[in-house]
Length: 170
Image (cartoon, rainbow, N blue to C red; front, side, top):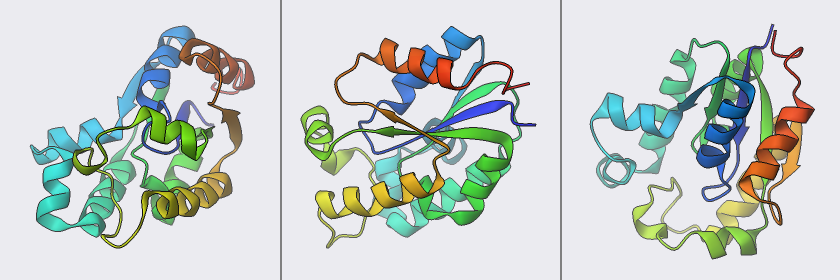
């Protein structure tokens, strides 16, 4: 039985902030896989990227997700979690996966620190190319999709809570 909710989406979609609000609303715990990576590796994401490259960060992210053994949690993943079929299969087993769908223009409006944010992408890939590539994957893995564009974070959390009732979480 699925006892967790996983939020997926682009950097800047609001996974962490909405995840915290959702956890409070539904009396659940909160796990941010980016924070787990930083705690367990004792390095910021950007430093991991600079030292090992984007594929290394994706591999580390997969390892952290596969280690997750939690109940009654909201899980906010890093934006590149969807590159790992194993990680997404694990998340689907333990949680309901919700895609926070935010337009490219809105993501660009929200994020100003692309170079230092720890975004795992190839050197020759534009942010728009990355957005399109990931959006396809988010839709592929999502069980629910919530529009994250013209609503407050509280409204988005409320919508998710309504879509995923406590009965579904055991």
